[in-house]
Amino acid sequence: MSDPGSGADSVFDVKKVRLLIELMKEHDLAEVDLRQGDQRVRLRRGGEPFVGSVAPAGGASASQPTINALPSTAKGPTQEGPGADLAVIKSPMVGTFYTASSPESPSFVKVGSHVGPDTTVCIIEAMKVFNEIPAEISGKVAAVLVENGSPVEFGQPLFKIDTRK
Image (cartoon, rainbow, N blue to C red; front, side, top):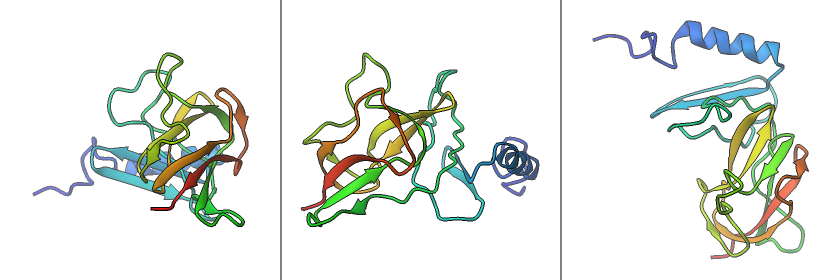
């Protein structure tokens, strides 16, 4: 029986991991999170964990690579002020905010939509890489705080989620 991490096609191949580390250094990335089928590799340098996502495993286009490296340390949804039942989903990176995967597609979510932790709420394009952003919380979308096509900053609030059951 062979070692599952020794094959050239394995995401756990030592040469591939070293290459990823070099790319992280070269591009000053804090984290790389890769998934292929049910295999996953997450490389992180210092700091706090980020909230982010990888492109879908199935058929990505040339403008939407399947490997996304996210230089981010944003925290997940946070409770805000007097409305303790409202959580805020913040941007895990600097980029351009999109509500749908293409101009012809419907928005991933809108006010009133119910979301779960794995629900994609938007896409943020950073350096020609399209990153799907999951809700990471369950609830109902109370507000969309950014307009489609707008630039967003790291940590900028994107959505308010009502977490009441």
